[in-house]
Amino acid sequence: MPKKPELMPGTLDMLILKTLTRHPQHGYGIALAIKRLSDDFLTVEEGSLYPALQRLLLQGWVKAEWKMTETNRRARYYSLTAAGRKQFGLELSQFEKMIAAIGRVLEGA
Amino acid sequence: MPKKPELMPGTLDMLILKTLTRHPQHGYGIALAIKRLSDDFLTVEEGSLYPALQRLLLQGWVKAEWKMTETNRRARYYSLTAAGRKQFGLELSQFEKMIAAIGRVLEGA
DNA sequence: TTCTATCCATAGATAGTCTATATATAGGGC
DNA sequence: GCCCTATATATAGACTATCTATGGATAGAA
Image (cartoon, rainbow over all chains, first blue to last red; front, side):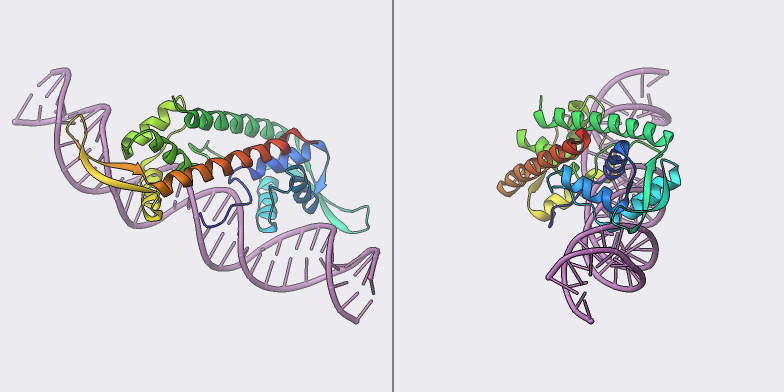
């Protein structure tokens, strides 16, 4: 592994959904929120973010709406659908089980 | 996500290295060990396992030796090199930081 | 007017896992 | 003797997700 990855593959959708559980947010804001909450450890590149948002839209887990930001810029605000909220629960639960399983292997027995 | 993945992408190398920190083991045995330690939650498919072992060999993190098993079958036993032991430490540390960062995002702030 | 930060988006490269397939054999059950 | 299962290694090709690189646009500060 020549370079440290910015994200753990497979967790981006979950992180985006989580960010949207608080309030609707535009793409750029989502990326900033994840970066900030992780103390700059996680960085969401645009090339990962926007394809991910397209995936989520296609699955019906988020919906989007063009609006103006507080700073007078046009932006696409994403918000969770009911299905998206459910999906977040699923992914969170699956993630926790996965981490626990990896933890068991790492502890050895 | 139509199907639950058997592994978290990016963690397989670490899990293999961890398994080998205890004692040398052949590929099939490594897969069984990971499955068993994780209470059957993690399944390492052959198509993931052997390419991963090739990667680890190429990087010089493990070395391999053909031997007979206790049950009289030929098998390729892998063991950690010094570099591999160091690499495991790195990956473990990186993994823990990553999990902690994701945890901070999931907790919200 | 130039620069930075904000904002969106896609194309192509890369990496890692999974599916499917191939090969081989020890040992148990019939 | 023969079949089946578990053991054991390995690769090719598909698939998915991320990253790199690029393109465009504009508000506001310097």
